[in-house]
Length: 377
Image (cartoon, rainbow, N blue to C red; front, top):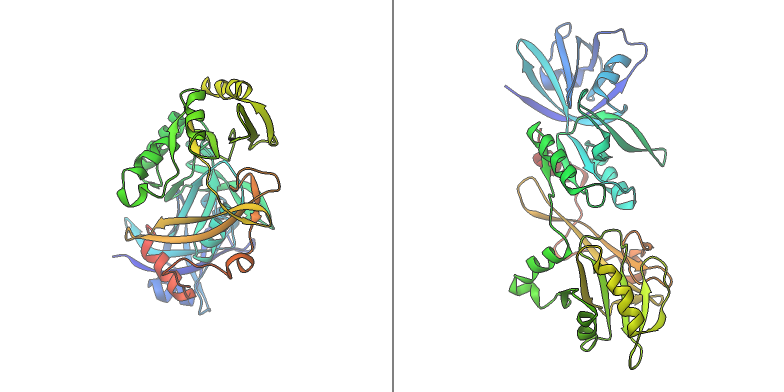
């Protein structure tokens, strides 16, 4: 029989004798644990065994001795969900969930993810394929501590959030995720394909196709010229690109001339079509490229601005809006993404605190319950 509750404060005490698991009265009653009996704590692939000692306290608190903290790779103090299980005749307190975010960048979105996880009593960290130590089944994850990113041993994850674009060879990442999945990790947000595959997928839906910018595979300068005959400006971008790298903006600038700008620093410069064709031709030697209609975006303080919506599925498979973010291109920039744009536009300054239709704020108790239903423990 499994008894669940949560969240539990997991702390450490250097004065606690080795082999003793100190639990509050509230936790002992909730999990039906007896003082003086043997037990174990399990987190990820780590286990620490000892004798259960109950101390007076209404809340849910679990105190570990230092060696147990190291064995579990737990960044104390931390709040986690708990449930009571068994391993043979031994009582086991299982802690979790642990979410590993497979990503190579450390920006505001990931700080948001880790903060949201912390509020829901979930341990989340960032990692790359090189951070997984299979021999000890431990991950050298990246966490936030006193406003900085720190790298430290972390428990093996129950769940892997795949945000792996740009962090290594595709086959290496695929092999890592397959191995972690076979090891019992739930992996989600898998490979979505490149920008061309995604465009084709969206265009296959009649209700979406009319809202997409015209997009074509780059075959030669003729592809750009043909699209410029229909639109004032186009973007040339790598199909497998990320972080706004390598993007060109090309706009008409008179008969036989265009104006070129890049996402990596090239300011708008008027050049002949022959020069532009040579620059575009160099791109063709490096994989698949797209030509896309430039959109006339809303401007804030003279810079283009767009709105980005992050949607995730909950534990019941329903889509939920996790965040709505407005981003403005930096001064003189041609893109407004996270890496090349300015910081977030203050919500009140552009739409009075935009909230997606149908979205509502969750109370603390509601959000905790929702996360508990959706976590794997």
